[in-house]
Image 1 (cartoon, rainbow, N blue to C red):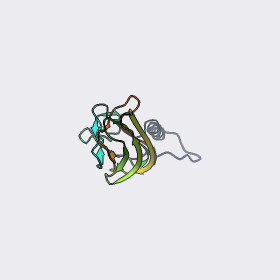
Image 2 (image 1 turned 90 degrees about the horizontal axis):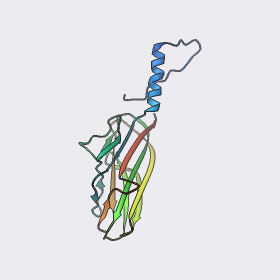
Image 3 (image 1 turned 180 degrees about the horizontal axis):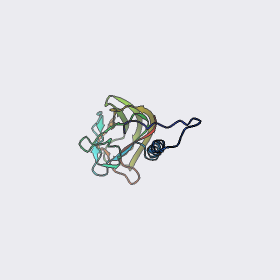
Image 4 (image 1 turned 120 degrees about the vertical axis):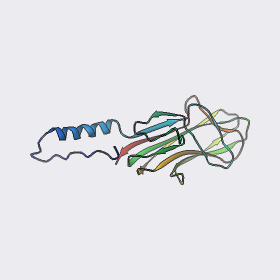
Length: 176
């Protein structure tokens, strides 16, 4: 389905028939199972180079009933139903044996503009730092989203899997 289903507007004298019941059933199915994609990086890690935006390649789709993620392009989600979406990005960062740094997480639209950005300071050898932020925005069919990270300085800034957070991107349709 490429658009939200139409909803019957009742008027005095409307007859209840199979077509109307099917329309109502389709709308209920849509509302209980709206477009959603949730991908994560369960295995591996990524060492961030300094002063370079680095894409996060995902390894697993936790949920993707509308086929918006393809393992062939593991860093990209492609919208196939237009509408308002909540978009969430998350990173788990480790800074081991390096210097303190500021890490920026960004969700990029069309690989050209940041739609969600967050800066986080990391402290050398002080455990994992989790970043988890979200926004709501309108997306069109064909729009693409990519989760990226940027290290302002330092060495050994690593995107990794933590005990409470893993690198992930989640997008859920909320309205048309």
